[in-house]
Amino acid sequence: MGRFKRLSPALRYLALMGVMLGASLAVGAGPSKLSRELVSIPKGQSVNVIVQYRVPMRAAVAHAQSVAQRGTTVRSLGLISAVAMTVKSESLASFESNANVAHVSLDHQVFETSTTTDFYDQAVNAPYAWSAGLDGSGIGVAVIDSGITDQGDFSGPNGSRIVFSGNYNNDGISNIFGHGTHVAGILAGDGANSTGSQYTKTFKGIAPNANVLSFRVLDGAGVGTDSTVIAGIQAAISMKSTYNIRVMNISLGRPVFESYTVDPLCQAVEAAWKAGIVVVAAAGNDGRDNSFNTSGYETIAAPGNDPYVITVGAMKPEGTATRADDLIASYSSKGPTPVDHIMKPDLVAPGNLVVSTLASTSAAIYTLFPQDQIPMDYYSTTGGDTSSATYFILSGTSMATPVVSGAAVLLLQQNSSLTPDQAKARLMKTAYKTFPKTSTAVDPITGIKYTSYYDIFTVGAGYVDIQAALSNKDVASSNVGAAMSPAVSRDKNGNVYVVTSSSVVWGSSVVWGTSVVWGTSVIQGTVNGNSVLAGSSVVWGTSSLAGYSVVWGTSAPTATLAATADDATVTYYGEN
Image (cartoon, rainbow, N blue to C red; front, side, top):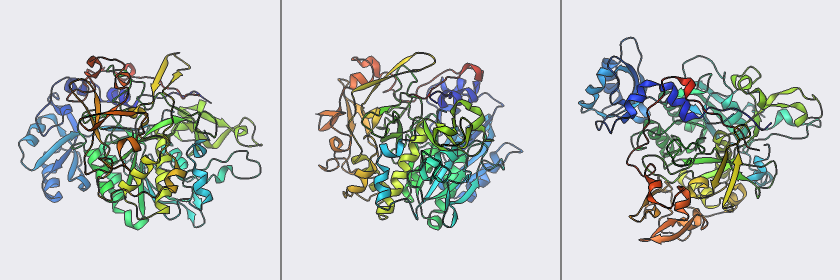
């Protein structure tokens, strides 16, 4: 039950991009309009880009069609005034000289962020909401993922609660991977396939009567691109009023290569947030990655690096209903974010060894991880050791994300007038903030020991607590961006501190101040009126400033990449 294999999203991405990025990442910052990955692309190479324009979309598309490589199509991304296209590398210079072009980014590949127990609902006090009659009724949730199969746990009194299903990956297949179905089950499954006298456990989602909208942006291997994700987000925003979409779940990501202020994927999630949709994104599963000597810090994935959205890390329920013994998953990505140094994650939630809905036994995820199939006798008095055809185990921040999405749904059902910023602030302030100072995990295959510190860059504002959030009546500012995650900086002595602003709720308020929202266990003292992070030397594994050289650089980490995918793999395991 406890072991499963998983490729590191960051390394898998880098391997797939191959030599092209190997040449470009090793250079310094490029021209102002071109992202740094596009510098020094070899001549004659085809490259997929997203071009943000300063002109109306009709003119932007016309220009794109004139520049795009012959025989390829262009995709309009009006949500961010951009066009996705394939061009020859020789054409990149023309964008730099065009006054109508704002910025050009690589159309990056993105991945689901699971790494391959049924106690996740109790750990976050979801039963309190259900007893109060809150189950997500009337709220629509957009799941930006690999598609969702209605295998029985998404039915409602009026038929299927999957009220919309669209494919934005252009492969014509509804759900051949299975990741999205598992995510949706954690968020809104009603446990129909495990309810009855013969069942000893019922696998129920956090908001078991919410309506789910499936936006398929990942292919059969759980891979998509920035442009397919943006297309899905764009479609979801257009349907907001029709389906009362109040929450968007994004359990996918890719490495950060440029500031969120120009990253097209970040611009898309910000557009959703500003349209009134609470966006919840996975932190990523690179918390064990020490490639840049940061002990897993600065590994937050995009779009979880955007300060508007709620970014979620993963906890381990430890096989019990109480949260008192829960520990952070060592693979959960840690902040601050690359490039912008935004304080992330915002929250943590159960995400390890989670049992949830299986699309079908023909789904790719089922055959990829046979060790994560669960026997019927795990939750039923019938079936013996036959593998379940309706439930499956996965771990990762992908699984933690829908727990928080579900919490947001319940909060909005209780008070529909809350804005995304108010919902985020409420969830962060009321989060459970009692943690040990450290914990260790040992990889069962390699024997490598990982030590986790429960600082602000590991657990954020704390462990989401649905009962506390629903019981609290504090309402933060309704201004868009009022709950933006703050940046962090350091002074000349190496002290790390939170950069706050009077325009955000945790600027100077007694109710919403940093020590209240993030807790005194991770913040102490002040530097020029700003809260200093406790244990900053422990965070970076050194008491000298040498430990800051990568994290506090002026740009994202650089690397020269391997030419073969086989050389760039890593194995992660679920932690018991």
